[in-house]
Amino acid sequence: MFYSSLFLLFPGFALGRLESQLRIDSHGYQTANLNTTLVKTDICSRIESKISGQVYYSSDETGRFSAGFAHALSSSSEIPLCVVEVASADDVSTSLQILGASRTPFAIQSGGRATNPGFSSTPGVHITLARLKEVRPSPDKSNVTVGLGNSWVDVYKALEGTNVGVVGGRVAGPGVGGLTLGGGYSWLTNQFGLACDTVLEYHLVLPNGTAVVVDSSVPDLFFALKGGLNRFGVVTSIVFRAFPQPGTIYGGLQLFPASSAPALVDAIQRFYSDNTDPKSSAILSLYGGASDQHVLLLFHDGPGRPPSFDHFSNITAAFSNVRNQSYASFTGSVPFISSDKRGAFQSLSTSAFTPKFLAAVANETLHYGQLAKTRAANVTYHIEPFMDYGKHATDAAFPHHHSPLPLNVFFSWDSELDDAFWKAAMQQSVNHLVQVAAAEGIYNSGLVTYPNYAMDNYAGEQIYGLKNTARLREIQFKYDPNGIMFLAGGFSF
Image (cartoon, rainbow, N blue to C red; front, side):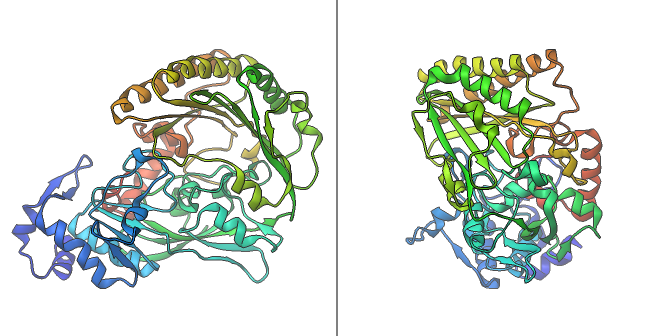
C-alpha cells in the first residue's frame, strides 16, 4: 500500500532513490531526510500544484511565510521548508497524502500558542489552518460550527448579538484547535464542563486523507479527540453545542503589588471554599521576576458584581478594569503570552486547594522570582479554582470526571542558552509542590496533567493515565497504522 501510493504521487522517482533518502525515527517509522534535494525542492511544489490554497517560501516578500509559522513564543517556532496555507478539507487531504507517501515531517498550526517546541512547528512542511475561518450558528441556534483557523476572540466577536455562545478559551489569542483538542478549560467550565465536553462533531481528515465526521456514533475517535491532541488526523472544523450567552457579563483584570500576595492567596482560598455560584470564576496569577505585580481575573456570566467576589473587596488594586462588558470585550482584554521570549508551561493537578498548599505556591513564586531577577526571566503561577465541573465530563482521553484542579506554571526567559536551566527549575518546583500536595492529602498518582499545560518530556501515562493511554494506543494504530501523524510533533502514547 505504501509503495503503490508512492508511485502515484512521485511517478518520476525510482523506489531505490527515495528509500535511500529515508531514515528511521524514534517511533520506528520511516522519515524523510530534510537535507535531500528531493524533499527540499519537490514536496512543497507538488503540494502547491494540487491545492486551492497557497504555499509560501522563505523568499516570500509579503510576510506570509514568516507569519504562517509564527508562535507566541520564539522557542516554539521552527523555520520550515515552506508554509502551506490550506483553504479546505480537500487541501488538507491532498497535503497529508503527499506528506505521508514521502514520509516528510510536518506540523499543523491552529493558533500558534503551543509552548512545546515541535508540537505545532517543524523544519519540514508547516501547514497553517489560518484560512478556515467559518463561525456559523445553526438556524435554530442549538449549535455553532467553527473553523480551526479561528482564535477564540474571532469566535466570540462573530457570535456577539446572537445571544448564544460556546465553551471556549479564556483569553483572546489561543486557537480553537489546540485548546479544544487538549480538553479546553473555559470561563464557562463550572456550568458546562470543558470545551471538549460540548463538542457534537469533529470534521476530521484521517491520516490516509479520508475526510470523516466524528460524533458519538464513532465512539473510539470521539473519545480520542477529547484531549488526544494531534495524533489522529487533522481536524478542520468543530460543531459545538451552543448555550445562552448574556449580552453583558461582569468581569475584568486587577493588578496588585507584590506585597499583596498573602492577602490574595487567602482570598482565593476562601473563594474556592465558599463559592457556590457556577456562573462566577476567578484566576489568581502570582508573578515574580522582572514583573512582580500579581494579576486577579474575575468573571461572572451576567451583569453586576456577584457576592462571591466580596472576598477580594478589601484588597486595594493598583489597577482595575473590572466592569460590565461583552464577553468578547472581556476575553479580548485578558493578556496572554505574545512576545519574542522563550518559555514553557508545566503543571500539576490536585483534588483540592488547601491553605498550606497555596502558601507553598506563593513561596515558590517568591523563590524563583528572586532567581529570575538575576537572569532576565519571569515566573508565573496560575491558581485556577474550579467547582465540581466533572459532573459535566464526557468519555474523554483526558480524564476529568473527578474535577482535577490544574496549577499552571509558566516561566519565560530571553536566551536559548537558558532553556535547560529554566525547564529543570520548573520541574524542580513542580516536584516540590507535588510533595506538599501529597502531604496535604490532595495529590495522588491518578491525578494526571492537563495536556495543554504539560511539558514536552511527559509520557502519555502522565497525561492520560494507564488505562486511557492503552486505549489511545490501540485507536492510533487502528486509524494510523503507518504512523503518518508521528511525522508531526506531539506527545507519545
